[in-house]
Amino acid sequence: SFLKLFLKVVACFFVCLCYRPFYLQLPSMPCINYFLQKPCSPFDIEKSSSVQKQAQPKLRINMDGDKCGTPVQLQLKEKRKKGYCECCLQKYEDLETHLLSEKHRNFAQSNQYQVVDDIVSQLVFDFVEYGRDTPQKKRIRYSV
Ligand SMILES: [Zn+2]
Image (cartoon, rainbow, N blue to C red):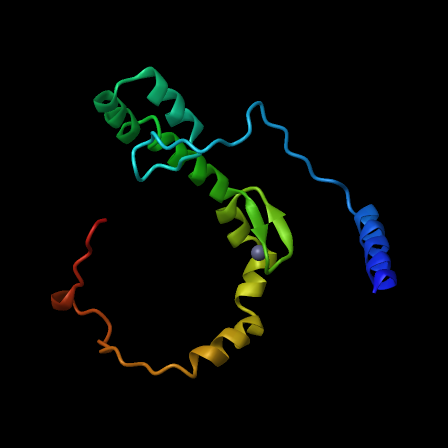
C-alpha cells in the first residue's frame, strides 16, 4: 500500500542519515575502450593513452614490457606487507613482524583453529605418506 511504501522511504531516509556519504571524483569517468589488445581491461587508462600515441606493433612491446609489468607487481608486494589481522583484530604495518608478535603467536598456537580441524577431520587422507626424508629420497625442488 501507499502507507507501507511511504514508511519504507522514510526508513531509508533515516538509515541514510546514519552513514557518511562516500564519493568518488575523477578527472574523467571510466570509459570503455574497444581499441585495446584483447586481454587488457577496456578501462585501462595508461594503455589507452599509449594506444592513441603509438602504432599497434609498438604498443604490444610497450604493454608486455615494464610499463604494465613490474611496477604493478612491486606495488602489490608493498601492499601485501601492510594489512589487518583477523585473528588479533589488529592492523599491522609489516606482515612478518606481526606474525612474530606475541599476540599473534599465542593465537596461532591456541585451540582457536579447532573449527578448521573439525572440517579437516572429515576429509579422507589418500596421498602416499613417505617417512622422514632420507638423503637418497631427497625431493626435487622445482623453481617456478
Ligand atoms: Zn595476528
